[in-house]
Image (cartoon, rainbow, N blue to C red):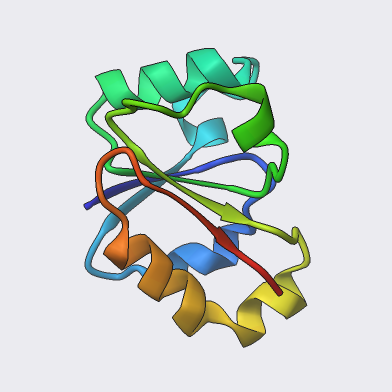
Length: 105
C-alpha cells in the first residue's frame, strides 16, 4: 500500500507501517500545493491512502468519487497519536478507495 503523509502528520508514525510504502508531502516536494491539487497529484501518483491532520479537509474539498482513501487524524500531537497507533494503523489498513475516516484522540 502506498501511503502519503500530509505536512502535519507526525513522521514517527511511519514506523508503524513497515509493510507499506510511506512518503511525506515534503519528501515529494509537494509542500506548496493546496489540498485539492495535492489530493489530485497523490491520486495520479497511485497513492492508496492520504493521512492528514487537516480536520477541515472534508469541508474544504469535494471528497466524493476520489481515487484515494483519506484518514484524518484529529490531532497533531505525537504523544496523543502514539498512544493510539493501533487505531490509526487499523484505520489506514481498512481504508478503501474513496473512503474518509477520522481518528479522534
